[in-house]
Length: 338
Image (tube, rainbow, N blue to C red; front, side):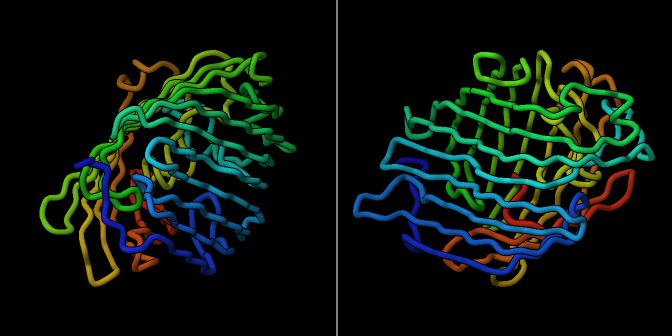
């Protein structure tokens, strides 16, 4: 049997609810989220498709409109990406693994975003595809440190990048996998040929492994490595931390051209639609890839609770509390970190 096959509980579900979440970079946010999961027709696709629509306003006067999607066609094609508009501000501590916590400042960034990728299923678990990313960002105000450092992209510009992807996917579920392997390799190129303000290239690999220890108890592993070349705008640097990579530090606490990260999670049932997790991560950034291993790694760990939003799908609201040597961070958001 195809290892990506599944036995759906339903071919269509539509969930809509008021949204409230908390991230270190947003404070408390309010809005609404709708999730549509579907697999219509007599001949089913090899996975269910999903489209989300989210709208949020934060207590820090940020505005977010985002439409992530993951669509599967027949047995061969996958279309995924995100459409969005963000009126947002980001943390800036400086660049590199030794930036200082007390140097924190913020900068505004307003931008529309288009990310789209089309992949072809060469074999049951192997896909090849192309990807396009557009960020047309403006930074109307910069504070003292950013003005002094003047990294590439501090005055805004257009990131228009074309990429290629290769992925191996044997997960038994895309929402809350308990078995299987997912590896995604991505390379991006930007320059005059792609109508970009910046000339650079990015290369990354993101690998997840899931193993069921016993009934509904799961070990999940994630390894991420990213490297860049050329005139990369600092807004496209790899970074620790976020709600998905290296929870426990403030948002974008460490940024640089290269990054390596290892994450581990133990996921377990609590009661009915409630689940729990314990997690830890270790990673670093650096100006070159080899320099990642020359500095003391950034270690963080934590625990969380999940609530399954729909009886038909294993998609969750998650609450995480994470700790690093710089203190605690709290996360309330949708979906697993990896």
